[in-house]
Amino acid sequence: MSWCWAGLPPWFTAAGTSVSAWDTPLRFLLVGTGSGSGETVLDAGPVLLLVGGAMAVLGLLGLVPGAALSVPRWLPVVLGSVATNAAAFALARVLRPEPRPGLGVGVLVVLVGGALVLVDVWRSRR
Image (cartoon, rainbow, N blue to C red):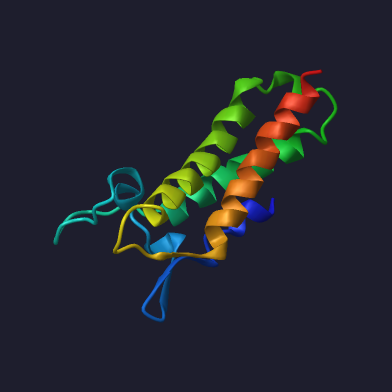
């Protein structure tokens, strides 16, 4: 579950500073604008932590005989999609016209981790 810790490495870099998922508002990932002053901000870090915790619980349930059968097949897909989509939105922010931030390693770790979860679900269906 290395991708649940991907909120710690930098997601964006600019002018010698870096920003992790814990400092990246979800609003910025979705619509490309920061939050206004005084607004309550939900950052990507806590969301990825919840998703990673849920995936860890699902992984532990897989160790209990019979418990894995009670987990809906769509749940890992949804959780993996949250991580993959967060990283895809971050990539979209980096690929926009100037000025744009640089890409940090955290985005790539989340993208690969979410994709691996989706591939694992796809392979287990066969």
